[in-house]
Image (cartoon, rainbow, N blue to C red; front, side, top):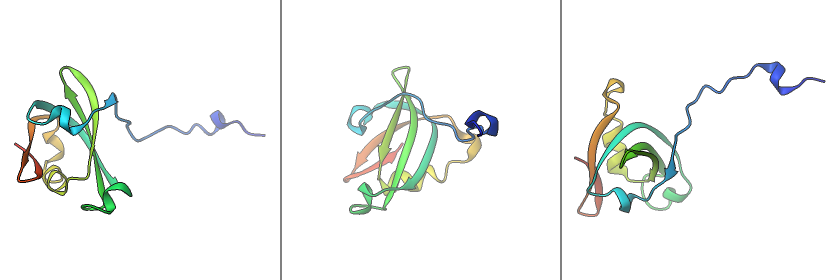
Length: 101
């Protein structure tokens, strides 16, 4: 019988570091965005784009993960060039929509 270690399977995707943090804790404060992932979401399907944006951020010199279904943030982050990471930003709420500034 084989053992899993004999398959020499390596994880190729990077996981995000840190604890989950609510958007309300970082709103209107400077953060650093290191990476993002975009995937389908059951939770955000009913209200919004049906997508979930995961952000790997630094806030107060600690790494955190933020989850959001904001279509405006998704639209904006997709336009950031790969060599543009990491970058600093402030997420604000403008007319009930979140956006990067």
